[in-house]
Image 1 (cartoon, one colour):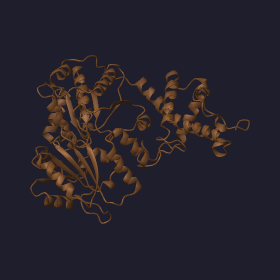
Image 2: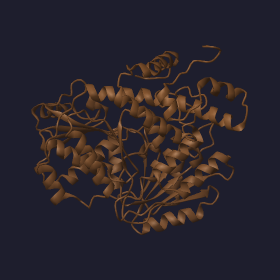
Image 3: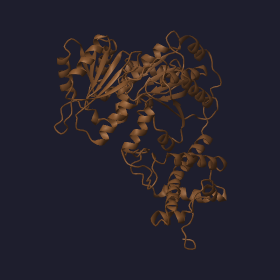
Image 4: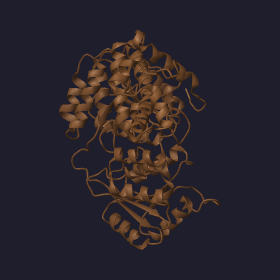
Length: 498
Protein backbone atom coordinates (compact mmCIF):
# COMPACT_ATOMS: atom_id res chain seq x y z
CA UNK A 1 0.00 0.00 0.00
CA UNK A 2 1.19 3.50 -0.83
CA UNK A 3 -0.59 6.26 1.09
CA UNK A 4 -3.39 3.82 1.74
CA UNK A 5 -3.79 2.88 -1.92
CA UNK A 6 -2.87 -0.27 -3.83
CA UNK A 7 0.14 0.30 -6.12
CA UNK A 8 -0.46 0.58 -9.85
CA UNK A 9 0.33 -2.57 -11.85
CA UNK A 10 0.19 -1.00 -15.32
CA UNK A 11 2.35 1.73 -16.78
CA UNK A 12 0.92 5.21 -17.12
CA UNK A 13 0.92 5.06 -20.92
CA UNK A 14 -1.19 1.86 -20.92
CA UNK A 15 -3.66 3.30 -18.43
CA UNK A 16 -4.03 6.44 -20.55
CA UNK A 17 -4.18 4.68 -23.93
CA UNK A 18 -6.85 2.21 -22.77
CA UNK A 19 -8.72 4.82 -20.71
CA UNK A 20 -8.59 2.71 -17.54
CA UNK A 21 -9.49 3.65 -13.98
CA UNK A 22 -6.70 3.24 -11.34
CA UNK A 23 -6.06 -0.28 -10.03
CA UNK A 24 -7.02 0.64 -6.45
CA UNK A 25 -10.37 2.05 -7.61
CA UNK A 26 -11.01 -1.06 -9.70
CA UNK A 27 -10.43 -3.44 -6.78
CA UNK A 28 -12.52 -1.29 -4.45
CA UNK A 29 -15.46 -1.02 -6.82
CA UNK A 30 -15.45 -4.65 -7.91
CA UNK A 31 -16.16 -5.53 -4.26
CA UNK A 32 -18.15 -2.48 -3.13
CA UNK A 33 -19.34 -0.61 -6.23
CA UNK A 34 -20.42 2.96 -5.61
CA UNK A 35 -22.60 2.95 -8.73
CA UNK A 36 -23.20 0.85 -11.89
CA UNK A 37 -20.82 2.95 -13.99
CA UNK A 38 -17.90 2.40 -11.62
CA UNK A 39 -18.72 -1.32 -11.45
CA UNK A 40 -18.56 -1.50 -15.23
CA UNK A 41 -15.27 0.44 -15.30
CA UNK A 42 -13.81 -1.80 -12.59
CA UNK A 43 -14.72 -4.96 -14.49
CA UNK A 44 -13.22 -3.56 -17.68
CA UNK A 45 -10.00 -2.56 -15.93
CA UNK A 46 -9.48 -5.98 -14.30
CA UNK A 47 -10.39 -7.91 -17.45
CA UNK A 48 -8.07 -5.73 -19.49
CA UNK A 49 -5.19 -6.30 -17.08
CA UNK A 50 -5.53 -10.09 -17.07
CA UNK A 51 -5.64 -10.29 -20.86
CA UNK A 52 -2.99 -7.60 -21.38
CA UNK A 53 -0.26 -9.47 -19.50
CA UNK A 54 -1.00 -12.66 -21.45
CA UNK A 55 -0.61 -10.72 -24.69
CA UNK A 56 2.43 -8.77 -23.50
CA UNK A 57 4.22 -12.00 -22.60
CA UNK A 58 3.40 -13.63 -25.95
CA UNK A 59 4.30 -10.59 -28.03
CA UNK A 60 7.59 -10.12 -26.16
CA UNK A 61 8.51 -13.77 -26.69
CA UNK A 62 7.60 -13.65 -30.37
CA UNK A 63 9.65 -10.49 -30.94
CA UNK A 64 12.65 -12.01 -29.16
CA UNK A 65 12.42 -15.19 -31.23
CA UNK A 66 12.19 -13.30 -34.51
CA UNK A 67 15.16 -11.12 -33.58
CA UNK A 68 17.39 -14.09 -32.77
CA UNK A 69 16.44 -16.74 -35.31
CA UNK A 70 17.54 -16.33 -38.89
CA UNK A 71 16.00 -18.46 -41.59
CA UNK A 72 16.91 -19.66 -45.05
CA UNK A 73 16.23 -17.20 -47.85
CA UNK A 74 14.14 -18.41 -50.79
CA UNK A 75 15.28 -15.78 -53.28
CA UNK A 76 13.45 -16.87 -56.37
CA UNK A 77 10.54 -18.63 -57.96
CA UNK A 78 11.82 -20.97 -60.66
CA UNK A 79 11.02 -23.82 -63.01
CA UNK A 80 9.30 -26.12 -60.51
CA UNK A 81 6.61 -23.69 -59.36
CA UNK A 82 6.23 -22.07 -62.77
CA UNK A 83 5.82 -25.45 -64.47
CA UNK A 84 3.29 -26.61 -61.90
CA UNK A 85 1.32 -23.36 -62.02
CA UNK A 86 1.32 -23.28 -65.81
CA UNK A 87 0.71 -26.95 -66.65
CA UNK A 88 -0.23 -29.08 -63.64
CA UNK A 89 -2.50 -26.96 -61.44
CA UNK A 90 -5.75 -28.98 -61.22
CA UNK A 91 -7.98 -25.91 -60.81
CA UNK A 92 -7.77 -22.16 -60.43
CA UNK A 93 -6.59 -21.01 -57.01
CA UNK A 94 -9.06 -19.16 -54.82
CA UNK A 95 -8.23 -15.59 -53.85
CA UNK A 96 -7.67 -16.82 -50.29
CA UNK A 97 -5.11 -19.39 -51.46
CA UNK A 98 -3.31 -16.76 -53.52
CA UNK A 99 -3.21 -14.40 -50.53
CA UNK A 100 -1.81 -17.09 -48.22
CA UNK A 101 0.88 -18.14 -50.70
CA UNK A 102 1.96 -14.50 -51.00
CA UNK A 103 2.17 -14.24 -47.19
CA UNK A 104 4.33 -17.37 -47.03
CA UNK A 105 6.43 -16.21 -49.98
CA UNK A 106 7.11 -12.90 -48.20
CA UNK A 107 8.20 -14.75 -45.06
CA UNK A 108 10.54 -17.12 -46.88
CA UNK A 109 12.22 -14.22 -48.68
CA UNK A 110 12.72 -12.18 -45.50
CA UNK A 111 15.71 -14.01 -44.04
CA UNK A 112 13.85 -14.57 -40.77
CA UNK A 113 12.64 -17.96 -39.60
CA UNK A 114 9.00 -18.48 -40.53
CA UNK A 115 6.53 -19.90 -38.02
CA UNK A 116 3.08 -19.62 -39.53
CA UNK A 117 -0.24 -21.21 -38.58
CA UNK A 118 -2.39 -21.91 -41.65
CA UNK A 119 -6.07 -22.11 -40.72
CA UNK A 120 -8.61 -23.39 -43.20
CA UNK A 121 -11.83 -25.33 -43.16
CA UNK A 122 -12.03 -28.87 -44.47
CA UNK A 123 -11.74 -28.83 -48.26
CA UNK A 124 -10.39 -25.28 -48.44
CA UNK A 125 -7.19 -26.28 -50.25
CA UNK A 126 -4.50 -26.20 -47.55
CA UNK A 127 -2.67 -29.18 -49.05
CA UNK A 128 -2.36 -27.51 -52.45
CA UNK A 129 -0.86 -24.44 -50.75
CA UNK A 130 1.68 -26.72 -49.02
CA UNK A 131 2.62 -28.38 -52.34
CA UNK A 132 3.22 -25.05 -54.05
CA UNK A 133 5.32 -23.72 -51.17
CA UNK A 134 7.42 -26.90 -51.23
CA UNK A 135 8.04 -26.30 -54.94
CA UNK A 136 9.30 -22.80 -54.09
CA UNK A 137 11.69 -24.43 -51.61
CA UNK A 138 12.84 -26.85 -54.32
CA UNK A 139 13.38 -23.94 -56.71
CA UNK A 140 15.86 -22.60 -54.15
CA UNK A 141 17.67 -25.90 -53.62
CA UNK A 142 15.92 -27.00 -50.41
CA UNK A 143 14.18 -30.20 -49.41
CA UNK A 144 10.79 -30.26 -47.68
CA UNK A 145 8.91 -32.61 -45.39
CA UNK A 146 5.33 -33.04 -44.24
CA UNK A 147 4.44 -34.76 -40.95
CA UNK A 148 0.93 -36.20 -40.55
CA UNK A 149 -0.65 -37.66 -37.38
CA UNK A 150 -1.64 -41.03 -38.86
CA UNK A 151 -0.25 -43.51 -41.37
CA UNK A 152 -3.51 -43.43 -43.33
CA UNK A 153 -3.27 -39.68 -43.76
CA UNK A 154 0.45 -39.84 -44.64
CA UNK A 155 -0.23 -42.47 -47.31
CA UNK A 156 -3.08 -40.39 -48.74
CA UNK A 157 -0.83 -37.33 -48.87
CA UNK A 158 1.76 -39.37 -50.80
CA UNK A 159 -0.89 -40.34 -53.35
CA UNK A 160 -2.08 -36.72 -53.61
CA UNK A 161 1.44 -35.30 -54.01
CA UNK A 162 2.42 -37.86 -56.62
CA UNK A 163 -0.80 -37.22 -58.53
CA UNK A 164 -0.28 -33.46 -58.52
CA UNK A 165 3.42 -33.72 -59.40
CA UNK A 166 3.18 -36.43 -62.06
CA UNK A 167 5.31 -35.71 -65.14
CA UNK A 168 7.50 -33.43 -63.03
CA UNK A 169 10.98 -34.38 -61.91
CA UNK A 170 10.09 -34.27 -58.21
CA UNK A 171 10.97 -37.26 -56.02
CA UNK A 172 8.45 -37.78 -53.19
CA UNK A 173 8.94 -40.53 -50.57
CA UNK A 174 6.97 -41.91 -47.61
CA UNK A 175 8.42 -42.80 -44.20
CA UNK A 176 6.28 -44.27 -41.40
CA UNK A 177 6.66 -46.77 -38.60
CA UNK A 178 5.61 -49.50 -41.02
CA UNK A 179 8.29 -48.74 -43.61
CA UNK A 180 10.40 -51.87 -44.20
CA UNK A 181 14.06 -51.91 -43.18
CA UNK A 182 15.45 -52.04 -46.73
CA UNK A 183 13.16 -49.27 -47.97
CA UNK A 184 13.99 -47.21 -44.87
CA UNK A 185 17.72 -47.50 -45.63
CA UNK A 186 17.10 -46.35 -49.21
CA UNK A 187 15.12 -43.36 -47.95
CA UNK A 188 17.87 -42.37 -45.50
CA UNK A 189 20.41 -42.51 -48.32
CA UNK A 190 18.17 -40.52 -50.66
CA UNK A 191 17.67 -37.81 -48.08
CA UNK A 192 21.39 -37.43 -47.43
CA UNK A 193 22.22 -37.32 -51.13
CA UNK A 194 19.43 -34.87 -51.88
CA UNK A 195 17.78 -37.23 -54.38
CA UNK A 196 14.56 -37.17 -52.33
CA UNK A 197 13.01 -33.72 -52.64
CA UNK A 198 9.91 -34.14 -50.46
CA UNK A 199 9.48 -36.58 -47.57
CA UNK A 200 6.03 -37.35 -46.20
CA UNK A 201 5.55 -39.34 -43.02
CA UNK A 202 4.41 -39.69 -39.45
CA UNK A 203 6.42 -39.08 -36.28
CA UNK A 204 9.01 -41.39 -37.83
CA UNK A 205 10.30 -38.22 -39.54
CA UNK A 206 11.74 -36.87 -36.30
CA UNK A 207 13.80 -39.93 -35.37
CA UNK A 208 17.49 -39.12 -34.90
CA UNK A 209 18.53 -41.37 -37.80
CA UNK A 210 16.55 -39.27 -40.29
CA UNK A 211 19.03 -36.75 -41.72
CA UNK A 212 18.39 -34.41 -44.65
CA UNK A 213 20.89 -32.95 -47.08
CA UNK A 214 19.31 -29.48 -47.04
CA UNK A 215 15.94 -29.30 -45.30
CA UNK A 216 14.38 -25.88 -45.68
CA UNK A 217 10.58 -26.18 -45.39
CA UNK A 218 8.51 -28.16 -42.88
CA UNK A 219 4.75 -28.68 -42.77
CA UNK A 220 2.95 -30.21 -39.78
CA UNK A 221 -0.49 -31.27 -40.96
CA UNK A 222 -3.57 -31.33 -38.72
CA UNK A 223 -1.65 -29.42 -36.04
CA UNK A 224 -5.05 -28.88 -34.59
CA UNK A 225 -8.12 -30.84 -35.59
CA UNK A 226 -9.88 -27.84 -37.18
CA UNK A 227 -9.54 -24.13 -37.70
CA UNK A 228 -8.80 -22.58 -34.36
CA UNK A 229 -10.98 -19.69 -33.23
CA UNK A 230 -9.24 -16.36 -33.62
CA UNK A 231 -9.29 -15.69 -29.89
CA UNK A 232 -7.45 -18.95 -29.20
CA UNK A 233 -5.04 -18.40 -32.06
CA UNK A 234 -4.11 -15.05 -30.53
CA UNK A 235 -3.57 -16.42 -27.02
CA UNK A 236 -1.95 -19.80 -27.58
CA UNK A 237 -0.35 -19.37 -30.98
CA UNK A 238 0.46 -15.71 -30.52
CA UNK A 239 4.10 -16.39 -31.33
CA UNK A 240 3.00 -17.69 -34.73
CA UNK A 241 1.86 -15.60 -37.65
CA UNK A 242 -1.61 -16.68 -38.77
CA UNK A 243 -2.92 -17.12 -42.31
CA UNK A 244 -6.53 -17.99 -43.04
CA UNK A 245 -8.06 -19.68 -46.09
CA UNK A 246 -11.63 -18.52 -45.72
CA UNK A 247 -13.23 -19.68 -48.96
CA UNK A 248 -13.79 -23.03 -50.66
CA UNK A 249 -12.74 -23.92 -54.22
CA UNK A 250 -15.45 -23.28 -56.84
CA UNK A 251 -17.83 -26.16 -57.51
CA UNK A 252 -17.84 -27.48 -53.95
CA UNK A 253 -21.37 -27.81 -52.57
CA UNK A 254 -21.93 -27.36 -48.83
CA UNK A 255 -22.70 -30.62 -47.05
CA UNK A 256 -26.34 -30.87 -45.96
CA UNK A 257 -26.45 -31.91 -42.29
CA UNK A 258 -29.52 -33.62 -40.82
CA UNK A 259 -30.39 -34.68 -37.27
CA UNK A 260 -32.42 -37.88 -36.97
CA UNK A 261 -33.57 -40.01 -34.01
CA UNK A 262 -32.39 -43.61 -33.74
CA UNK A 263 -35.89 -45.12 -33.66
CA UNK A 264 -36.59 -44.06 -37.24
CA UNK A 265 -34.04 -45.83 -39.42
CA UNK A 266 -36.21 -47.02 -42.30
CA UNK A 267 -36.14 -43.77 -44.24
CA UNK A 268 -32.41 -43.31 -43.54
CA UNK A 269 -31.52 -46.77 -44.84
CA UNK A 270 -33.62 -46.20 -47.95
CA UNK A 271 -31.77 -42.93 -48.52
CA UNK A 272 -28.36 -44.65 -48.18
CA UNK A 273 -29.54 -47.37 -50.60
CA UNK A 274 -30.56 -44.74 -53.19
CA UNK A 275 -27.21 -42.98 -52.90
CA UNK A 276 -25.21 -46.19 -53.30
CA UNK A 277 -27.37 -47.37 -56.21
CA UNK A 278 -26.61 -44.03 -57.87
CA UNK A 279 -22.89 -44.89 -57.65
CA UNK A 280 -22.03 -43.08 -54.44
CA UNK A 281 -20.52 -44.49 -51.21
CA UNK A 282 -21.27 -44.06 -47.50
CA UNK A 283 -19.52 -43.99 -44.12
CA UNK A 284 -21.24 -45.12 -40.92
CA UNK A 285 -19.27 -44.12 -37.81
CA UNK A 286 -19.65 -45.64 -34.34
CA UNK A 287 -18.14 -44.35 -31.07
CA UNK A 288 -16.97 -47.76 -29.77
CA UNK A 289 -15.33 -50.85 -31.24
CA UNK A 290 -16.94 -53.39 -28.93
CA UNK A 291 -19.99 -53.39 -26.69
CA UNK A 292 -19.63 -51.52 -23.42
CA UNK A 293 -21.32 -52.63 -20.22
CA UNK A 294 -21.30 -49.09 -18.87
CA UNK A 295 -22.17 -47.03 -21.94
CA UNK A 296 -25.37 -47.61 -23.88
CA UNK A 297 -23.87 -46.80 -27.26
CA UNK A 298 -23.93 -48.43 -30.65
CA UNK A 299 -20.70 -50.31 -31.21
CA UNK A 300 -18.83 -51.05 -34.39
CA UNK A 301 -18.78 -54.86 -34.25
CA UNK A 302 -22.54 -55.13 -33.76
CA UNK A 303 -23.10 -52.32 -36.24
CA UNK A 304 -20.99 -54.05 -38.88
CA UNK A 305 -23.14 -57.19 -38.62
CA UNK A 306 -26.34 -55.15 -38.65
CA UNK A 307 -25.34 -53.06 -41.68
CA UNK A 308 -24.32 -56.15 -43.68
CA UNK A 309 -27.73 -57.66 -42.95
CA UNK A 310 -29.53 -54.40 -43.84
CA UNK A 311 -27.63 -54.00 -47.13
CA UNK A 312 -26.99 -57.54 -48.45
CA UNK A 313 -26.72 -56.27 -52.02
CA UNK A 314 -23.66 -54.11 -51.22
CA UNK A 315 -20.13 -54.82 -49.99
CA UNK A 316 -19.56 -53.51 -46.46
CA UNK A 317 -16.06 -53.05 -44.98
CA UNK A 318 -14.93 -51.98 -41.50
CA UNK A 319 -12.09 -49.86 -40.13
CA UNK A 320 -10.91 -49.21 -36.58
CA UNK A 321 -7.80 -48.16 -34.70
CA UNK A 322 -6.86 -51.64 -33.47
CA UNK A 323 -6.22 -52.88 -36.99
CA UNK A 324 -2.63 -53.07 -38.18
CA UNK A 325 -1.53 -50.30 -40.57
CA UNK A 326 -1.35 -52.70 -43.49
CA UNK A 327 -4.89 -53.90 -42.79
CA UNK A 328 -6.21 -50.35 -42.60
CA UNK A 329 -4.45 -49.43 -45.85
CA UNK A 330 -5.89 -52.47 -47.61
CA UNK A 331 -9.44 -51.63 -46.46
CA UNK A 332 -9.02 -47.99 -47.47
CA UNK A 333 -7.78 -48.93 -50.93
CA UNK A 334 -10.79 -51.19 -51.42
CA UNK A 335 -13.07 -48.33 -50.47
CA UNK A 336 -11.22 -45.86 -52.70
CA UNK A 337 -11.60 -48.30 -55.61
CA UNK A 338 -15.35 -48.65 -54.83
CA UNK A 339 -14.89 -52.37 -54.24
CA UNK A 340 -16.73 -51.71 -50.97
CA UNK A 341 -19.67 -49.31 -51.02
CA UNK A 342 -20.27 -48.82 -47.28
CA UNK A 343 -17.54 -48.35 -44.67
CA UNK A 344 -18.38 -48.99 -41.02
CA UNK A 345 -15.74 -47.24 -38.93
CA UNK A 346 -14.72 -45.59 -35.69
CA UNK A 347 -13.26 -42.08 -35.67
CA UNK A 348 -10.01 -43.42 -37.13
CA UNK A 349 -11.27 -41.79 -40.35
CA UNK A 350 -11.74 -38.43 -38.64
CA UNK A 351 -8.84 -36.74 -40.41
CA UNK A 352 -7.24 -37.04 -43.79
CA UNK A 353 -9.47 -39.60 -45.49
CA UNK A 354 -10.22 -38.33 -48.99
CA UNK A 355 -12.70 -40.30 -51.10
CA UNK A 356 -14.51 -37.85 -53.43
CA UNK A 357 -17.08 -40.50 -54.38
CA UNK A 358 -18.35 -40.82 -50.78
CA UNK A 359 -21.47 -38.68 -50.37
CA UNK A 360 -23.04 -39.87 -47.09
CA UNK A 361 -21.67 -39.68 -43.55
CA UNK A 362 -23.83 -41.24 -40.83
CA UNK A 363 -22.69 -40.68 -37.22
CA UNK A 364 -24.23 -43.08 -34.72
CA UNK A 365 -24.64 -41.90 -31.09
CA UNK A 366 -23.72 -38.41 -32.26
CA UNK A 367 -24.44 -37.08 -28.76
CA UNK A 368 -21.14 -38.64 -27.67
CA UNK A 369 -19.07 -36.47 -30.01
CA UNK A 370 -17.93 -32.89 -29.61
CA UNK A 371 -18.55 -30.26 -32.27
CA UNK A 372 -14.98 -30.37 -33.53
CA UNK A 373 -15.12 -34.14 -34.07
CA UNK A 374 -18.52 -33.97 -35.75
CA UNK A 375 -17.26 -31.25 -38.07
CA UNK A 376 -14.17 -33.28 -38.95
CA UNK A 377 -16.26 -36.36 -39.65
CA UNK A 378 -18.57 -34.32 -41.84
CA UNK A 379 -15.50 -33.15 -43.73
CA UNK A 380 -14.90 -36.69 -45.03
CA UNK A 381 -17.77 -36.12 -47.49
CA UNK A 382 -18.44 -33.19 -49.79
CA UNK A 383 -15.09 -33.64 -51.53
CA UNK A 384 -16.54 -34.30 -54.97
CA UNK A 385 -18.92 -32.39 -57.22
CA UNK A 386 -22.05 -34.25 -56.04
CA UNK A 387 -24.30 -33.11 -53.21
CA UNK A 388 -23.24 -34.77 -49.96
CA UNK A 389 -25.01 -35.40 -46.68
CA UNK A 390 -24.15 -35.85 -42.99
CA UNK A 391 -26.76 -37.53 -40.79
CA UNK A 392 -26.42 -37.29 -37.00
CA UNK A 393 -28.21 -40.10 -35.15
CA UNK A 394 -29.18 -39.64 -31.48
CA UNK A 395 -31.80 -40.89 -29.02
CA UNK A 396 -34.77 -38.59 -28.47
CA UNK A 397 -33.83 -37.74 -24.88
CA UNK A 398 -30.98 -35.21 -25.05
CA UNK A 399 -29.50 -32.64 -22.69
CA UNK A 400 -29.87 -28.97 -23.55
CA UNK A 401 -26.16 -28.69 -24.48
CA UNK A 402 -26.33 -31.75 -26.73
CA UNK A 403 -29.44 -30.51 -28.49
CA UNK A 404 -27.65 -27.18 -29.01
CA UNK A 405 -24.69 -28.99 -30.58
CA UNK A 406 -27.00 -30.75 -33.01
CA UNK A 407 -28.62 -27.43 -33.92
CA UNK A 408 -25.24 -25.79 -34.53
CA UNK A 409 -24.16 -28.64 -36.81
CA UNK A 410 -27.32 -28.54 -38.88
CA UNK A 411 -27.24 -24.74 -39.21
CA UNK A 412 -23.58 -24.11 -40.13
CA UNK A 413 -20.83 -25.61 -42.28
CA UNK A 414 -18.34 -22.91 -41.29
CA UNK A 415 -15.53 -24.46 -39.23
CA UNK A 416 -14.66 -21.11 -37.66
CA UNK A 417 -18.25 -20.53 -36.52
CA UNK A 418 -18.37 -24.06 -35.12
CA UNK A 419 -15.05 -23.62 -33.34
CA UNK A 420 -16.30 -20.45 -31.66
CA UNK A 421 -19.53 -22.22 -30.67
CA UNK A 422 -17.53 -25.13 -29.24
CA UNK A 423 -15.48 -22.66 -27.23
CA UNK A 424 -18.63 -21.10 -25.79
CA UNK A 425 -20.15 -24.46 -24.88
CA UNK A 426 -17.13 -26.22 -23.41
CA UNK A 427 -14.63 -23.54 -22.46
CA UNK A 428 -11.16 -23.36 -23.99
CA UNK A 429 -9.36 -25.87 -21.74
CA UNK A 430 -5.72 -25.55 -20.68
CA UNK A 431 -4.45 -24.84 -24.17
CA UNK A 432 -0.81 -24.93 -23.13
CA UNK A 433 -1.05 -28.20 -21.25
CA UNK A 434 -3.18 -31.25 -20.55
CA UNK A 435 -6.37 -29.89 -18.99
CA UNK A 436 -9.33 -30.61 -21.26
CA UNK A 437 -11.86 -28.06 -20.07
CA UNK A 438 -12.12 -24.94 -17.96
CA UNK A 439 -10.34 -21.61 -18.11
CA UNK A 440 -6.59 -21.37 -18.87
CA UNK A 441 -3.99 -18.85 -17.69
CA UNK A 442 -5.61 -18.68 -14.23
CA UNK A 443 -8.12 -16.12 -15.48
CA UNK A 444 -10.28 -14.88 -12.62
CA UNK A 445 -12.57 -12.38 -14.30
CA UNK A 446 -11.84 -12.20 -18.04
CA UNK A 447 -13.45 -14.61 -20.52
CA UNK A 448 -11.89 -15.50 -23.86
CA UNK A 449 -15.28 -15.65 -25.57
CA UNK A 450 -17.23 -12.76 -24.09
CA UNK A 451 -14.24 -10.44 -23.86
CA UNK A 452 -12.57 -11.00 -27.23
CA UNK A 453 -12.93 -7.30 -28.11
CA UNK A 454 -10.87 -6.46 -25.01
CA UNK A 455 -8.42 -9.20 -25.98
CA UNK A 456 -7.83 -7.68 -29.43
CA UNK A 457 -7.29 -4.25 -27.87
CA UNK A 458 -4.73 -5.60 -25.39
CA UNK A 459 -2.92 -7.23 -28.29
CA UNK A 460 -2.69 -3.94 -30.19
CA UNK A 461 -1.30 -2.07 -27.18
CA UNK A 462 1.14 -4.87 -26.30
CA UNK A 463 2.49 -4.92 -29.87
CA UNK A 464 2.91 -1.14 -29.84
CA UNK A 465 4.92 -1.25 -26.58
CA UNK A 466 7.17 -4.15 -27.60
CA UNK A 467 7.89 -2.60 -31.00
CA UNK A 468 9.32 0.45 -29.21
CA UNK A 469 10.77 -1.25 -26.12
CA UNK A 470 11.39 -5.00 -26.77
CA UNK A 471 13.11 -5.60 -23.42
CA UNK A 472 10.74 -3.41 -21.37
CA UNK A 473 13.85 -1.63 -20.16
CA UNK A 474 12.62 1.94 -20.41
CA UNK A 475 11.81 3.46 -16.97
CA UNK A 476 8.11 3.87 -17.72
CA UNK A 477 7.80 0.15 -18.53
CA UNK A 478 9.69 -1.31 -15.56
CA UNK A 479 6.40 -1.80 -13.72
CA UNK A 480 5.20 -4.01 -16.60
CA UNK A 481 8.40 -6.05 -16.51
CA UNK A 482 8.11 -6.53 -12.75
CA UNK A 483 4.45 -7.54 -12.98
CA UNK A 484 5.22 -10.06 -15.74
CA UNK A 485 7.93 -11.59 -13.61
CA UNK A 486 5.61 -11.80 -10.61
CA UNK A 487 2.79 -13.41 -12.59
CA UNK A 488 5.15 -15.96 -14.14
CA UNK A 489 6.44 -16.90 -10.71
CA UNK A 490 2.95 -17.38 -9.28
CA UNK A 491 1.56 -19.50 -12.10
CA UNK A 492 1.23 -23.23 -11.52
CA UNK A 493 2.53 -25.18 -14.54
CA UNK A 494 1.87 -28.74 -13.40
CA UNK A 495 -0.18 -29.48 -16.52
CA UNK A 496 2.24 -27.97 -19.02
CA UNK A 497 4.19 -30.26 -21.31
CA UNK A 498 7.39 -28.83 -22.73
